[in-house]
Length: 145
Length: 100
Image (cartoon, rainbow over all chains, first blue to last red; front, side, top):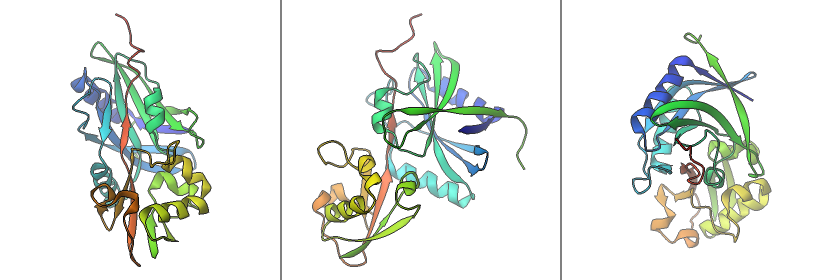
């Protein structure tokens, strides 16, 4: 599985995560699927609703999911998934991530160490919910189409 | 009661790739059970062990959150629309932190 993500969008995720540190940031991935995988064409940065525990938890409320999905459809895009950051922790899903994940979505996780963005990885939950499978992020340069 | 269940994108692969499914049920609980019986692969994504809806599965009847109504006992009428909407949640493993 391949997730194509431009340098520009990668930098936007890194900037959001850096600005949010030491708290977790979150946002939506908008784009399209084709026979070569998925292509992220835009992001929607969101406010983490876990004000009680933002250092290790994030939440996107259903009303925000509805709103972002509407934005995507109005632009002729699909809501492909979500990104969030792990402050001072690896860019791999936790058990909490797994318990709360939805299938089909791409989950991009960015590790931020001492306020510096580090590794970024993407993951998709297996249909049986047992674990995530890594999704290769392919950097894409330049405008699309 | 004949109702329509709107299927969110991440669950459509498990519901015959449909964006909506017609089911019968007198309550929300019955309708979702009918849906999960017809499309068995949906069940593990909708329900936790013990049979309760997962906390991040939000259900609306005619755009009203069932948590504000009678939850899974919310009665249905012919023509009602049930919408399943994700919450998106996660977070790092607090025990796995870089030491620096």
